Length: 360
Picture 1 (cartoon, helix red, strand yellow):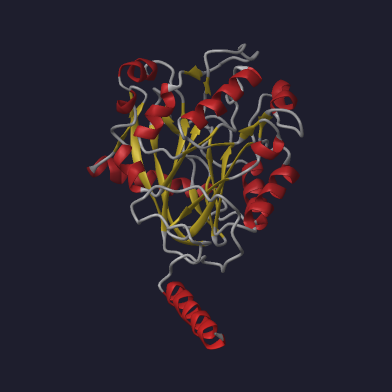
Picture 2: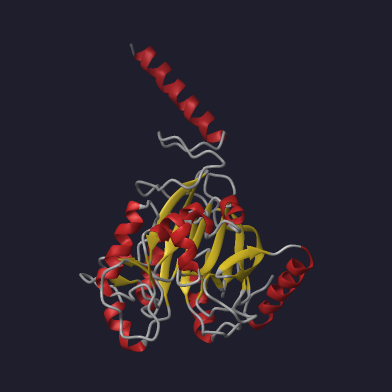
């Protein structure tokens, strides 16, 4: 009996070692196949090495999305058509993240501000059909229709199986990351906003027992969330709403916050709000994108119709590569650029790095 037990233990150890050498995760649940979209991690997993135990993962990041006219009419007639022109770019990524700058609700009272946005639940159908996997509602429109609108947005996201970060029924939920395991890599996405109307900062910021948004104005709280997520993540992303409208150069508030977030453990820091593109590049070993611009948005100026997708390939904490996939907005919808237009747009995006603290 002792010999049999010893042989069984040895066989189990041999099989475990062989699985590890093949790069397979030790958990009993099967890992996603290479082409699969991310699967949420049900529990925190043990600490792993700097590069995790998996293979490279491709991420995509896009800017501001709302569904006001002329997009609203397109959404009403065919949700799948809203992102159809650029969907192949988004679907190529293992995980695509964007900024949802609208409340998904038909209820609530409009906030006392100049512009308020809301959209029907079919907006999530459009996002999913277009290849978006995660959205952040941490922005200056996330609570345009109050706590009721935020709760409706979160509930609609759950029903549509669309992960929503940056907002919650309390600060624990608002600052919590979305987690996904892709090819053995544990990915975490945190959403937060550095932009809130002054008279709404208090009422819109999530608290211990208060629904609201994750505010980057409370830097200690955001940095604590980043440090906590770092302990159980191979790749940690912070998706922000930040910058000054129509200003293509990063502000001192942006550069300061980016530096602090990277020091706290963020591997990728990206965001939008300015409605124009800003520079992107490396900050130490991390990647920062200061301004993704508009994405699905009414826009008419030459600067505000410039759009695109930031595509990043990572292996754990290592940024393997990144590239800008330029697009141009027409009728509220982004269309990928080709040929000489694409070349000029890429050159312009690289030029924007000159007024940042980033390197290529």
